[in-house]
Amino acid sequence: MAFKPSSAQPPSALLRQVRPLRLLLNQAERLEHLQRLLESQLQPAAREHCHVASWRDGTLLLVVTDGHWATRLRYQQKRLLVALQGMEAFGNLRRILYKVQPPLVPAKRGTNNTELSANAAESIRGSAEGISDPKLREALERLASHAKSAK
Image 1 (tube, rainbow, N blue to C red):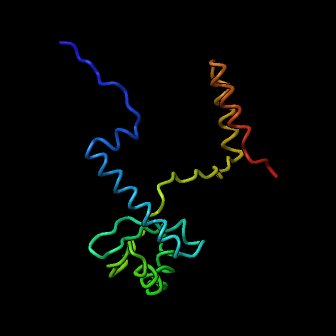
Image 2: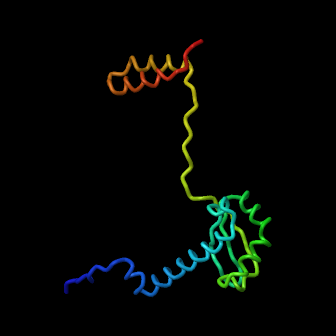
Image 3: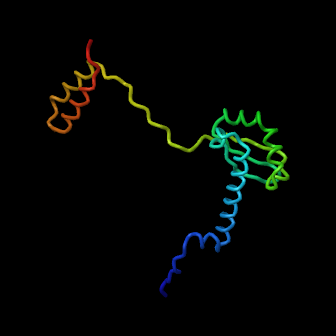
């Protein structure tokens, strides 16, 4: 019995035909629509810091990038609630919840500010003199050259 794979289909066709994928796509499209509606009511500076996480049972859960923006949005909560309730998609909105979740970007690596003392550099140079491997000796000498200059 040989396995005969099905013919390749474009991803968009798969998303629309397979039920779990179709439901997931519909949910994503719904959240994207709600996000656009929310952004229409937010100040331009706040738009990139606030995203719709869920909308269910009259509760809108918003994910905010930091506490500063969560506080600013809480001050505007009544205005935002009234504005969103006026839209058909948020007709039964009763409350807005905020969850602070920092963005998932890797932290920037800082520069190494550690300075090598003159004594440490001299010790490394002394060690380099006794090394027979030319690559290792060169690396140690390069490291020793980073010492702060004596004043």
